[in-house]
Image (cartoon, rainbow, N blue to C red; front, side, top):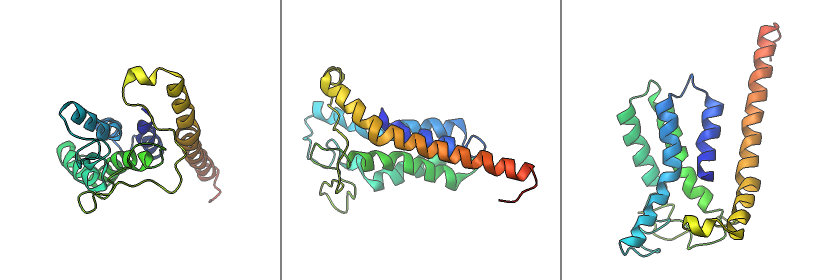
Length: 178
C-alpha cells in the first residue's frame, strides 16, 4: 500500500484545481497496479520472466503507455499534467521497488533491456507476497521500514509545499512580494 504515497503527495501538492478526482483515483490505482503481475505465478509465469513479477509491468515504458492511454480515456482539462501525474504514479512503483532489499530486481528499461536492476542503496525491507505472510513480525518490520523511507519523507515534502503555499499566499495578501 505504500506505493499509493507518491500519488497522494502529488495530489496534495498539485491540488484539486489542477487534478480531477478521476485522475487522482487513477493515479492511486496506477501506483499499485504493477503488482497485479503476481497473478502470473498462478499461470505458470516464472518470477524472472519478462512478464513475471517486477518485470514488464514495472517498466518505464509500461508506465508511459498506460498513462497516455488512461489520460486519453479520462480526457482531463489539463492533458499534459494529468499524463505526467499518471506516469509518475505508475513509474514510482518500479523505482520504489528498486530501493528494496530483496527479489531479482526491477525490469525498469524493458523491453530495451530485460536485465533486472536495483538502486545502489536498498534501504526498504522487501514486502512478502501474500497477506498471510504480511501479518507477521516480518510484516511489522516492512511497515516500519516503509514508514521511515517512504511515508515520513513524502509527508515532509507535502508539508513543505503546504507551508510554502500558505506563506506565499500570506505575503500576497499583505502586499509583500515574495
